[in-house]
Image 1 (cartoon, rainbow, N blue to C red):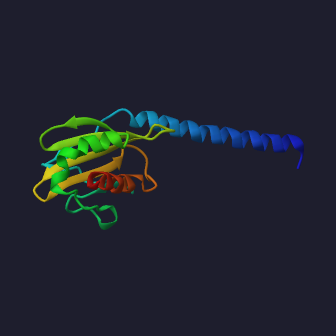
Image 2: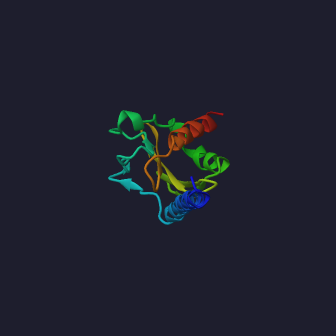
Image 3: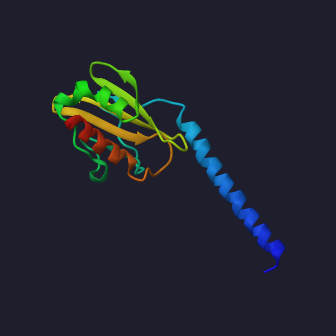
Length: 149
């Protein structure tokens, strides 16, 4: 292969890589605009079809379903969120919303809680993108551990 053709190929790859990274930074910025979806008919918003959401609300598909938090966890949720690096954005008598931001690209995930008779319902979802690599499910597991300590 000729050296100039190799250089062109390397420049093309570098350019595509820069575009890809730039695209992720742009998506991160886009995700910072907005807020948690909130309640719909007194329940947490259903998860979208994409695999970047988990929820304890009844009717959630099995692969996205998590158990509600214990009823007594409600008062501890805001402190646990802060200790995990999140920011509480709404805190009412029956609804809490929080944001978690990824460290590198700045992607925002919304974590919401609804006080229910059977426990504290939780929904964790990415604002943008398709997949989350399991981050939202792991966040709910970590939150559950933090609340049980």
